[in-house]
Image (cartoon, rainbow over all chains, first blue to last red):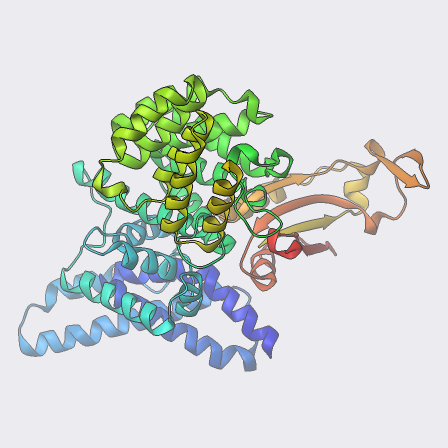
Length: 413
Length: 117
């Protein structure tokens, strides 16, 4: 029985994004689509234990869900017809959807669903939760566990997001023209947020949450398959694959973070590096790299270096020069300073970092004093370095990271 | 989680008989779906064991034996590396793989970081 339940849950994970996507096209309402898809799943849970899992469970679920969606639509048409005579338009709408198992256009529907779930109207948290739920096939319990939040909090976030989309009558489509790029940026951002929460957890004591890393990778690869002509999608996939390749090397035996240059490169996952470099090569075919592509190119410089000493820092600085132009954030400027320090010595880098200290958005960013501490230590200014590492430790929100920074301070003494 | 899905060898794969065009097409479609779903990391088919070799280690001595190897059913003829949330998910995906005629797949979980924790 448990085995069957697990099997049905797995089928749901595999099939639900497609079903919700298709139903969203029929109902034009993501929230209703998910409810109707869920109904089909509940029916499966009731029937399959007695009748066995159908040979093509995806088609079974899709047919049941579509039938329910069309029934619901017809009901609302009947009501509409009774109140006012504007039903003709709606009738023609349902006529488009027969119940045959048409797989046509399912990719388009998935892409639309992704764009709607990541609509800029929604907060980042809502986009992330909705994307994991609708496109990742995760349950609210799983999302809550991944983000160290309570299940009701996530459930409420999702309900509210769906309501927001419904009330704003967000069209179920991939926008065109200039809006397209802006909306795509919102999709990429949501996927990368998921990745980062898994790769560099901002809360809790564990630095890595591998499941979120895998979810983000899966979503990114899905998007790349759906949008094979968007270079920046491949840029994001490349960035995530290469970063994920270092997961095993990033954590020491006591659970502490190991910095990139100190990592055992033998532990880097060559399969993911290969996938990342391939994705980067695809991104480069589309001309100038975007922000994700450039970050991937930087990550690739590290991936290609057999040892830390062989890192091509001059090239990395050049890539950061390009990145800071398309993504002029203080954090990028700080990373550029680190690269300059490696390529040309701590003095040039310290000048940039000192300027960044006036940046209000970096005031509570622990990596600013951490970088400054490192540059000071390399310049032989140990006393100042200690103060900076201690400041960084006080700002760090992750317990393991804090411990590592305090250890650096102790090393300077 | 990541899994290796191993395809067991059979008489044909050991004899170097290539799959039919039809099967290759079906397999292409199956792999395309895995790719679209973002779960396929790698997949390769292996040539007959007659082209391979075995290296055996024993008490500091190494022995190399050239193929072919007799116990066909124990041999691997191909593999996928896929990611998934559970073994059941992988099973559900590969239940749809276009195999027949007594073909056998073996689903094996790959060690992850946390397994060594």
